[in-house]
Image 1 (tube, rainbow, N blue to C red):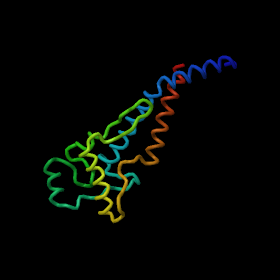
Image 2 (cartoon, helix red, strand yellow):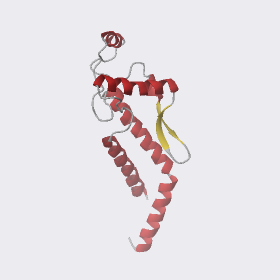
Image 3 (cartoon, rainbow, N blue to C red):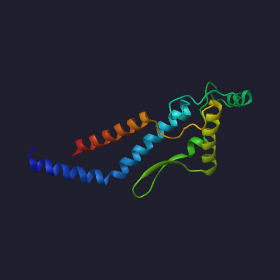
Image 4 (spheres, one colour):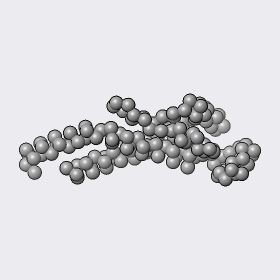
Length: 152
């Protein structure tokens, strides 16, 4: 590739990346949403990668068991309502993961307080991405850009 071809390639790549910016951000947002939901609702872990804990209320564990839910560890998933309320949204220039229901938002914040109190460490952070998750998202975006480069 000579200098003019390289210049043309870089201009085309730049145009494509700018044109697809929101697509990439939405894909990254959905990927991040999946990582967050998997960590909290499947693995029962908070942002510092620690376990949310075990169910200490025998009556709640029995209720979960009778409903066909696992009881080995806290996973914050009984009806699926909290998990379903965590969504990816966009505005003109940005994408965010948020809880789209005020009641579920209060439940989410209350869980951070309750879980932290049980652990004796104050409020814990459940809903922010971990550094590992952030690196996975960065790698995913790099892969998307690499695919775009290969298409040009």
